[in-house]
Amino acid sequence: MINFISDAAVITKRQLQQLTRVPELLLFSTIQPIMFVLLFRYVFGGSIDTGQPGGYVQLLMPGIFVQTVAFTLAGTAVGLAADMQKGLIDRFRSLPISRSAVVIGRTLGDGALNIVVLAAMGITGFVVGWRPTSSVFEVILGFIFLLVFGFAMSWIGVLIGLSVREERVATNATFIVVFPLTFLSNAFAPTTGMPRPLQYVAEWNPVSTMVAGCRELFGLENQFGATAGSFPSENPLQMSVIYMILIMAIFIPLSIRKYNNAAKK
Image (cartoon, rainbow, N blue to C red; front, side, top):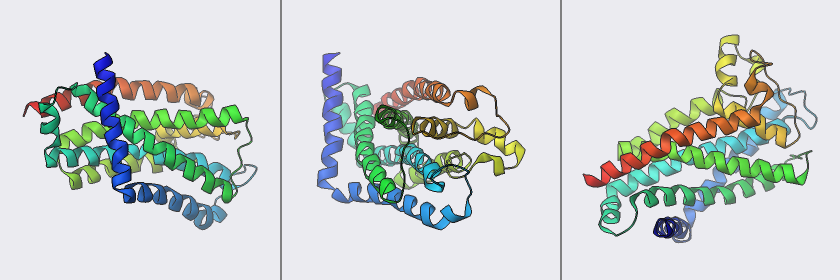
């Protein structure tokens, strides 16, 4: 167990050292979500009536936060696919380290990047008018909640990256997963404006419950349409925890098994 923790810490350190060797990675990982904040705030903000105190930016920021951590799976998938192409998986295989520690260290390193990105986004949101109305404890809890969700989503990226083995394919595959999840949700606009059949899909979407949970922690009221009164609408925090547990319970074993099989080839 001690060796496993030590091995995972070494791989995590490797991930963090890449940020210092390739600062462009940190720069562009931070710029992209900031651009989303500014574009949605000033391009779409005036055309969407949320009915919330503080206007569209109050509704927007939790959605942007969740979208950003959901995109963690893209970075994880592309990074692992690149490692596969470069033969790093074979190198790790030849070292006396735990195989599961390699993928766990990878996801922890990507999670550490999320801390920096969320901090930059939070500052940007504050500059453009975002003001949480809940307590400091609830705001901190909201950001912890986001980091755990990003960690869970990164395991989907691990499985994709180990399955496709090519960077360009990994990029396309992750967009197929992330875009429907984020845009068919309540992240950027209330679901009440969608056709009723889509409302059911959007409001049971893990991203929607996560966004609703964060809005609740940041002091906003949630708006649900077709599923108003259902368990996800009444208990978004609890439903988000259930989704995260399910994602990790499914994808962590599958990812570790895929990595072990890939290392044998």
